[in-house]
Image (tube, rainbow, N blue to C red):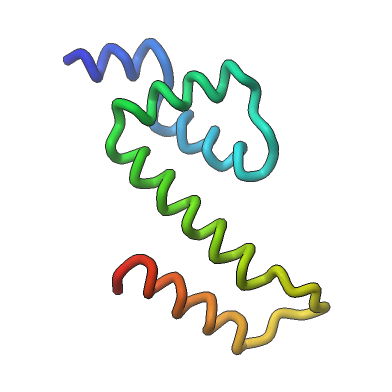
Length: 89
């Protein structure tokens, strides 16, 4: 009951995931960051999504940090393999 009230007062899950994506693309305001932090403290689903998003972002940056003009098939396969390994598949 309390969690439902907090979700209504602060952020919905869809707003939280949007803020997580926005935060990866650029900086979010302190108010948005505060609201997102509160939401992540109470919502286990969004907390898991946030961890997966961070993992994918890290893998993506590591894999494609090379300054190449094109993405090779071997790079794509490497990225897939690392992602599957980290997710435990």
